Length: 411
Image (cartoon, rainbow, N blue to C red):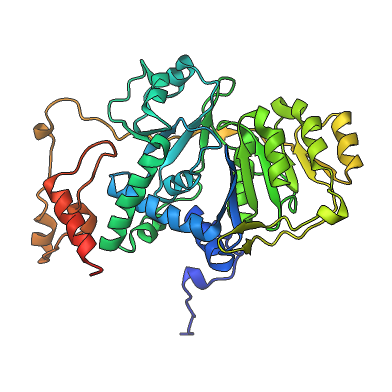
């Protein structure tokens, strides 16, 4: 009888497997490793632009993600964000994605009726807002299990980072372990506005090469703007410098300070473009300088070279006036033809048992081991023995004991 070779299915020839999409945390870690001193964000603070490097972003995201795990947030739990698009801590959005939370960004024009309709039956685990007063928008909406986390002028954010730092002392691999079980496609942002039902952001349909790692992009939009979400997704994996402005009245002043190479404006704010373009004219040769952002002891972050080429304007429906103004500056116009938003596909809550659970049929936990002569010991998860803190509650005696041991560990 002849010999018939047998191969495993994995070794058989076939089509190349599609590439596995990197997670948000993997993208941030790569930028922090390869381009630590490059500027990731420029925050449009009232006192002026504030740069933040990829190394700083990765450090903050890691601590915030560990703090969220320490507070009890888990994969596939729904988070409603009432934060504006240009809030002071964009690392919070990245940390929520890192731990696997599904974030619903609510636009400023979404009313109570819109929220009640779209969040009906949704098991919301956490509400994120600037202050407790913002939660008035959710009045009348039943959220029986939701907790509240407020930035509170930076105090809430600082407390979250403290929790994360303490958790990392006790469990240094907690963020990597949390990220390893997250489906990157499942945690893509959702958004809700007064004109758009609850949907998921569309896949990026911008032309490849619109953004490069050296670009400085200024984006106008609110938290529920699909174009803003497309740019944010591109920023996460390309790694250019990003500045977001929600208030259109501030767009001109911020553009004058940041000097963007790419200007992204949605259709509803397109009337602001001519005024913004007037401040982007190239300065005289004697006044030209690098567009890199400075931080620390005179060290230049970012690798954007100085150039006299005009800005690239990305907008869905550019007018002839905008095209002429951009051409006069030596720039170009890119039409943002976005795809339709996708269904939100929020995680469904587990089924609820009605009646007496003691009457349900059940099997002894040790019966399989008894039948096969095995003694299966349950896996011990260290996180099960750590306290899960609601973000608004105080600390118990056990919490204080663990935190005391964590502080003594480095000593």
